[in-house]
Image 1 (cartoon, helix red, strand yellow):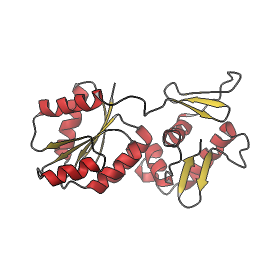
Image 2: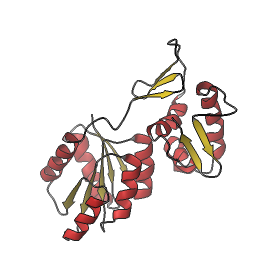
Image 3: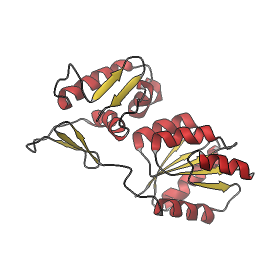
Amino acid sequence: MSRILVVGVEPQLRRALSLTLRARHYDVRTASDPAQALTQAAVWNPDLVVLDLDVPDPETVAGVHGWSRRPIIVLSGHPQPHAEVAVLDAGADDYITKPFGIDEFLAHVRAVIRRTPDNTRPSIIDVGDLRVDLAGKTVTGPRDDTVHLTPIEWGILEPLLRNPGTLISGQQLLTAVWGPGHVTDTHYLRIYLSSLRHKLEPNPSRPRYLITAPGMGYRFEP
C-alpha cells in the first residue's frame, strides 16, 4: 500500500483528495501547510507528496523535497509556463493545473508512483553492531539477540534513521510523537533519547550515532 501525503490550505480539496485516494486503497495522511508537511515527511516518509499551492512556490517545493526525497505532484491554479518550470526545477516531479478531473489526478498519481524506484526508503539500517529493521520493527545484535524498543522510542528513532545526517528539531519530533500540544515538553525527548542511547549506543554517555545539537535538535550519524 503506497503512502501519500496530501498537503493543501483548501480543506475541501484536501478532504476530497484524501477520501478519493483512500477509496483506491492508498494509505493517506494530510497536512494543512508546508510546515506540517515537513514534519510528516520526516517522520512518516511517504511514497508521494501531493502539494496544493495557491501560488506555485519553488522554495516550498524545494523544502519538502529536501526532507522527503520522494516524488512530489504540485497542484496549482496558475497555468503560466514559467510557474510550472520553476517548481519542476525545484524538485517537483509533476504539475497539474486546477481545475482537474479525479480520473486525471489518479492517472498522474499512478504514473508518478510507477516510475519511482523503491530504493530511496531503506528499511534495514545498521547502527554500529546492531541491525534495525524499520519495516519489521526489530533491533537485533551480532548474535541475533533482540533489543526491545517501546512504540514511543520507535516514533523518535525512525525519522532520525530515515534522514541520516539531517538535523530534526525537537519541536518536529514532539509534534510527530505526542502531538502539537507538546512542542514545549522537551524533557520527554531527553528521557527517551537517554533510553535509546542506553539500548543502542556502545557508550551512552558519549553517543556516536544519536547526536544532540544543543538548542537545535537531533540527528543520526551513520
